Length: 166
Image 1 (cartoon, one colour):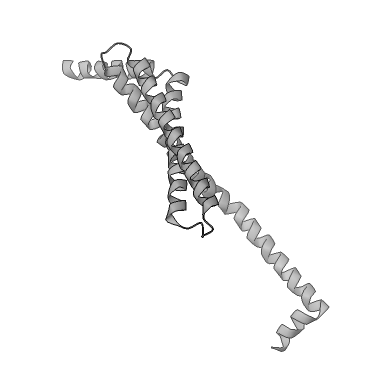
Image 2 (cartoon, one colour; image 1 turned 60 degrees about the vertical axis):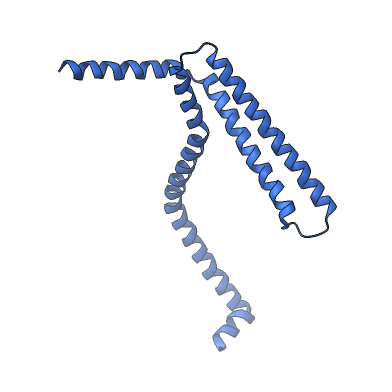
């Protein structure tokens, strides 16, 4: 008890506590700088890969389906459908935002009420769906998926012919 009092109440004790704390903090930062970036980088790469996959995977699937669809104006009808889904998502999200603001202003009760929480959740889900639909629209505009699918199809067909001939 006497040592605790001396460290907390005297100037030399406070200086010693500060020095020990500084050395421990420096050691912790050194260890963190050495080991955390590798884990953080790997975790960030995994998260980024999953997010990009979440947005790009539907676009690639739709492009493959369109490639094998034998109708005319398939790309235009697909883009129109995706644009309509995008606009519907924006409409739902903006409507739920208006409901959220109206309920928030109308009731003095806590924000955790379901009548307030549900429109906000619907707003975020609508925005997320709108972003995903926008990615579905944008990916074929920036990447030539049609030629990639055609080359993959040709490669598979060539491998099938080689195995059939053997």
